[in-house]
Image (tube, rainbow, N blue to C red; front, side, top):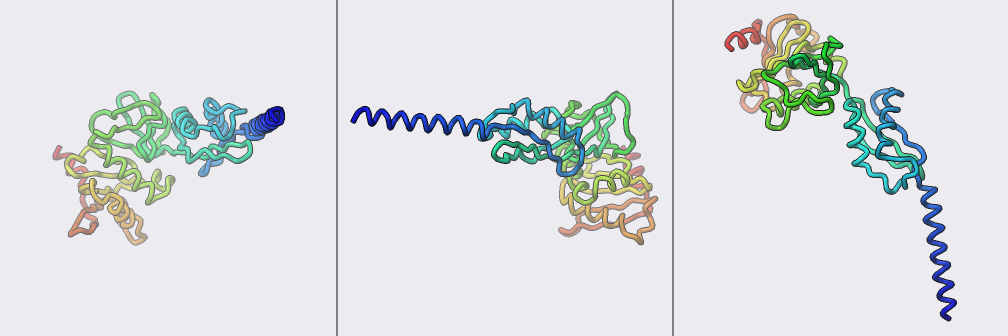
Length: 265
């Protein structure tokens, strides 16, 4: 009887061992793939795979893949992407699904040129300007960081909320290529006075009053006025958007309100 129990126990252990061995081979990672949702860039895909494999070695059990560690490694190594998810495709493939982040803005800070995303993330730093096809982002003082992969402003900055709200709103309202073609600069210098100015490349200005509230609605209204086919003042004057009786209103005036405001100091 004792020998029977021993035999059964032995067979169970053998069976479990076989399962573990087969499972470890069957479910070991053999292929890591980088897949970009918004760009066809084989070079960037290869960079993503190389970065992911720092934390994800081939042969790792697919059930033990640590998504958070991979995302942190990839995003810190390659600033101009955002990982959407790490996808397990059984039995042995792992896909790093991501989007490419585009350079919307350039900040000239001292001798540095910082190329920045629509989330104010620093994607690239150079000592000379490398492209005019970016919107200049102006503000008083220095950014809180100049390091690639970090953000221009920390949460204690007076620009943090306004800058993020504005840039997110612009990227929701217009496509990237259109924005780059449309605007020359954004000036955040006067947000402490409840004013924000945007200059179009055609010459007109957009003035956003009290930018701390209803930013998306104000941006949408300003853009709808600017993009009207029968709007004949794209090359001069100022479109002002503001709060009025719990609504958002907009008006064009034949004035360079930016010059008037900056002249006041």
